[in-house]
Length: 66
Image (cartoon, rainbow, N blue to C red; front, side, top):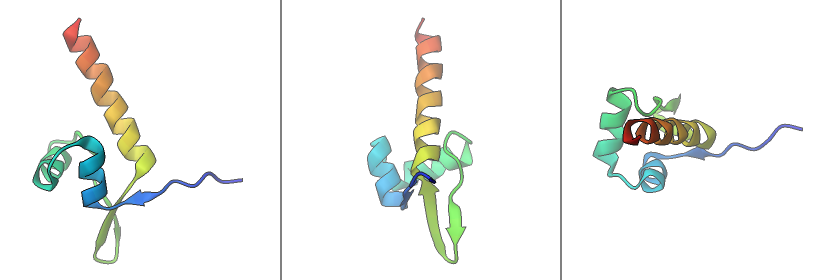
């Protein structure tokens, strides 16, 4: 059985990360956040991909803080 991984829009991703939508696109530009999946003219992000990027950022912050 395949697990369900919701696709999130920019507003949902920005809310999850507690950043603005312009900041979300800046983070995509600098490689911190993965680029969206394009569905026609829609941009969507895998919730699992965003969670993985968030976990990497937390690990980096912990290493820098030590």
